[in-house]
Image (cartoon, rainbow, N blue to C red; front, side, top):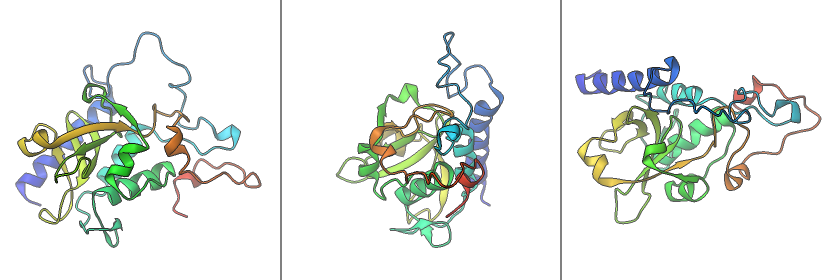
Length: 213
C-alpha cells in the first residue's frame, strides 16, 4: 500500500471515529436538544410491520470502507467484477439497506433528497461534475470532509478522497440523502419505490436483511 493510500485510509478511519465515538464537533452533527423519537429509533425500526430494518450510518460507512482497494471497472457493480462510481454506491446500498438504486449518478441524484453541504452526514451521497454534464460522479460521504468512491480508470480502485482536495472541491456538484435519518424507516418516496415488497408469509429477520439474495 502506497503512502498516499495509507494517508487516505487513516483519514477515512478518523472520519468514521467521529461518528462512532461521539466526539464533539463530529461530522454528523451533534444531537439536537429536542430529539425526534421517530428519527432516533433503533435500526430495527419497521421490523414489527414487516419492513426490513434500516441500517445506521456507521454500518453504511464501515461496509463501504471494507471495499477499499476493489477494482474500478466502467459499467461494473460488484467487487468481483469491478465497479464504477455509481455501481459502487448501488452495491453498498443494496447490500446494507436492501435498496436497488439506479446504476447512474444523475438518476441517483433525482430519486434522493437534496441537502446542503453543511448538512452532510456519513452515508449521504456527494456528487461531482467531472464532465460537461452535471452529476457525472458520485461517492459516499464518511464524515470529516472525507468520501469514499470508485474513483476512475486512472486510479483504478475504490478509495477515500477529501472534499477539500482541489480537484474535487472545484467539481463538487451537490449532496443528496437516501436514508432520511439514522435507523429510520423513512426513505424518499422515489427511493422507496426501488425496494422489493416484503413477503407476508416470511417473518421479518433483521439478519436476513443484510444477506445477499
